[in-house]
Structures are given as C-alpha cells and as structure tokens.
Image 1 (tube, one colour):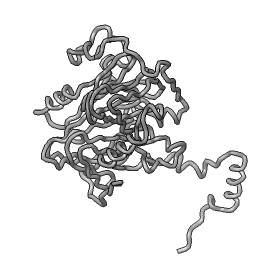
Image 2 (cartoon, one colour; image 1 turned 90 degrees about the vertical axis):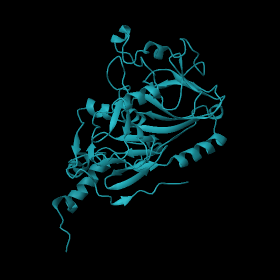
Image 3 (cartoon, one colour; image 1 turned 60 degrees about the vertical axis):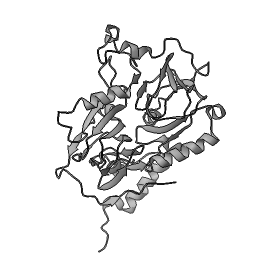
Image 4 (cartoon, helix red, strand yellow; image 1 turned 30 degrees about the vertical axis):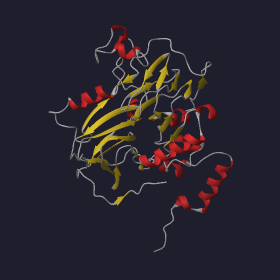
Length: 370
C-alpha cells in the first residue's frame, strides 16, 4: 500500500520548516504532538538494580575513591537508561525529577559539610555508627532510619564507628537543574562542628507526634531523624484495618511543624506488604523509586515483571501501570520516594485504576549483574 502523504509532509512545508530552523525558530504544527501529547509520555523507563551489583561497585569504589582524595561523597547514582542521553551526566536522573544514589562511608572517614538548593534525604540500609551533622546537630544513624536535609541547610557526615555504613540518598537534582535554580556552598570549616547537643531534635519529639508549641510556626527540619523502630511500630499498629488496595500498609514521613511532606519536593513512604499480598494495578502522574528494605516479591510495570529481593532498587516512571506482589514467607517492607508534592503543587496529580484489576505478564526483566 502506498504511503499517504499529508500537507505537512509536502516539500513546501518541509522547506519552510528548514528555513525557520536556520534562524532559530520552530514550526508549532510539527512540534505540538510532542509538546502536548494526549497523556504523559515519560522519557524515564522502568528499571531494577540488584543489590549485589550495587554492593560490588561500592566495594570497588572503596579501593579507588575516598572523600579525602576526591573531596566529595563516595556515592554511585542510579542512572535511568531512558534519560542517560540528557547532558551533562544524564542530569544524574533516576526519574525526570529525582536523583537517587547509594553511598558508602567507612570508619574514620568524613564527608565535608556543604549546603545547596536541592532538598536531600537519606534512608539507612546497612550498618551503624556514623552520623550526619545538620545545622550543628549530630545525628547518629542506624538501619531503617530516615533522615531529612531540606534545601539550604549545612550538612556533612563522619564515621567514628567500627563497620561500613551504606545508605540511600535522594535529591531533587534534575528538577532544580532543569529550572536553573542550583546554588552550592562548601562549608568553610570542612566538617561543621556541633553547636547543639546530639539528638537535640529527637529529644524534643519524644512524645511522638506531640508537637512542642514552639513548632507551631513552620520550620525546615524540626525533626531530622525518624527511627526505624517507630516507623515499624506505626506500620504494625495498622493490623486489624484493611490494607490499601494499591500500597498495603503505608505511612508517610512528614514535617511535624507543617503536616506536609518532610521535603517540599519529595514524598517519602514506608510500606508493608503483608505475606501473600497482591495489589491492584493503577497508574499516576508521579514517579516513584523503591528500595526493598525487607522481603521479596515482584512488581509488574506496564506488563513487565520485575522480581525483587532485599536491597534491590526499582524505579516506576510516571503514568506507568504497576502492581506489587509479595511472594516471600514474611511481610515485605518497601521504602519509596516520589515527586508527588511537585505534581500536587502544579495541580497535575491524576490517578487511574486499571479496570481489569491486574496486568498480564508479557515479559520478565533481566537485570544487569556486573
């Protein structure tokens, strides 16, 4: 069958398009299908990074790179294959708005203090004994802890303990880079010195979500560490109530002085998928990055099966059908970050439920192993 040519394909139009391009102008009649599709068409793709691969690369980085030698963190970021052609460095993008990385610090090391216009968070995955210092407060970290570092706050890390520590970093680097808002300052003293007692903010919130009256006025980080045991208790305390059909039992880390997400541009959740749980399939305009803290199972994303186990990382792009299945012998715990606050702020958040409830598995993802 002969191809049907439209008026937009005619030599006259093509020649005029080239004429516009030569003087840095552009034809909307050709661009509008790409600029304004009927629904989101993310450039990011679903992807899974296995823990063993990440661990091996961190151990190799340990031999090559130190904070003293390189002047910065020993961190390896999760580069989404669909975004790696975007320059520079693919915008270090795990999703179109968020950066995620795994970071290793060894006993005796220190990562210098700095501040920047990106908001940062940490989820501790392995080890204990290191601390982060945020605005003059040392906060010692343990597995399962969630820590906040909103934009503009001085922060650095040091490790006086005895075993390696690894954590997940997440920042809104791609978003801030794209809108031209990046500012960065190194601390003049290399590593900031303490100016308040250790764990000062946690002491003020010993009553859980009972808020000190001084925090009735919004603050950037009134509580900078959320302990794992408190998070786990909150999730276990939800037994006896029906799980969310899409996310199981899930809680969100919030800023207790505002009631909003702990970071202005990044939502952070911990969810518990009960043994045998199979969620319904849905999609939404925010993108998510998952870390498997405990358990095993799989997630179906747009018909592709991603099998995960403890330590793995999974990215689910925006507007992608997805559902979770716990196939392990115990509850599964998934830590996740997303750009939900961004979508809500711009009135772009939408969600759809798959009418069929579940997706057929059309293919199985094969992860990189080395």
